[in-house]
Length: 198
Image 1 (cartoon, rainbow, N blue to C red):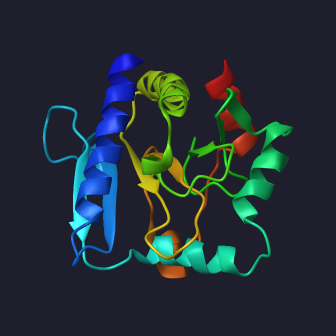
Image 2 (cartoon, helix red, strand yellow):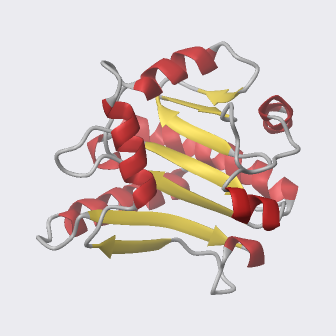
């Protein structure tokens, strides 16, 4: 847990430092694990990319959140706290299999309070995040699959509830997914959450 906590603190430090550069609009932090996760190096690693544009997925999340008077993710967290999709929870964080999962065993990890960026977290929150993070990584190891995880946060001047999405890469997208932009997922979020909790 201490090692994971240190890595998460490095993420925050790099994000804070790189975000200060005038040309940088977003700092993408992600992990590719395994062949189907797009890994390019054999050893485990995370990548940090400082880019001059906002990613489309992040902009879509920000724009969707703007349509609500209050943070929609805060509402989702309240719903998932009492649902069968909840996986792990501690004082500061909660994880759950999202209602409309795109990937088999997809999992989202959120701070319970409205934090916009990992750089806003205190020492106790980093520890709580590391505790759940370790549990998720151990379950992904048990699945023995390729996966990705990435951080989404609110860039300067925007409002988005910070979160981390975990995407096991078990199924392969085919013609239907690419032609329709719809995804078939044969593992329900309730089944996925049961696996993580077991």
